[in-house]
Length: 235
Image 1 (cartoon, rainbow, N blue to C red):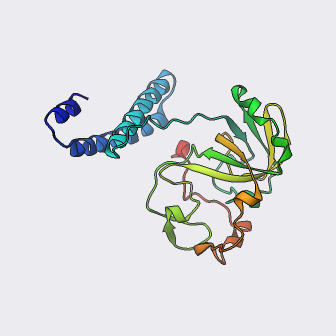
Image 2 (cartoon, one colour; image 1 turned 45 degrees about the horizontal axis):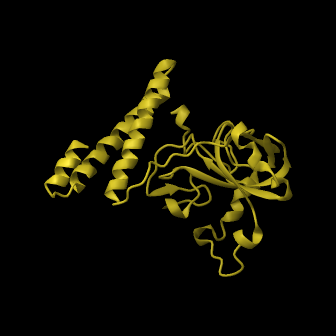
């Protein structure tokens, strides 16, 4: 902050300073992520605190570089998934290909009142934090094709922000949970939000193109996830 103050008083552009600081913070974040995987006991708590501070600082620096003054982006789970999938290897690639039966989205106590009226919908969007995903690249190998594609043209879990979007059929809504049929999420996956599926809003009526998925999407019923996207906790 002192360096930023001196830059401001001197009428200097702090861009280079911020870019270099961002690189240091990114490197520190990766080191702490590795430490967190191996930490036990109170060390785990300490590393997690350091990682949270570094990520908040990185968000602040990136906001300054973007010429925007915004608070760090922090999302907290509203609940967690209980599913039969405990390993990425062998998992269905999309909810429609899940044949393991029902899963449970346990909702945390402060958010249970938000479930009112949800039982009137047949399907919901589950917005999830893919907590076992780490790292990303501009292109990724794909399960439904034999070549790499741009990350934003895929549904790969390795993304700049590992957010998952799953359409699940609602079986029942309890006071503390949503029972769903068909998920492509690991057991214990944090859920960030639940939104009702509304065909008029969520299904375009014309002009639909599916890019490289054309002629390949049907493979989702016969192909399963493998070890190309290793789980963070099993590196």
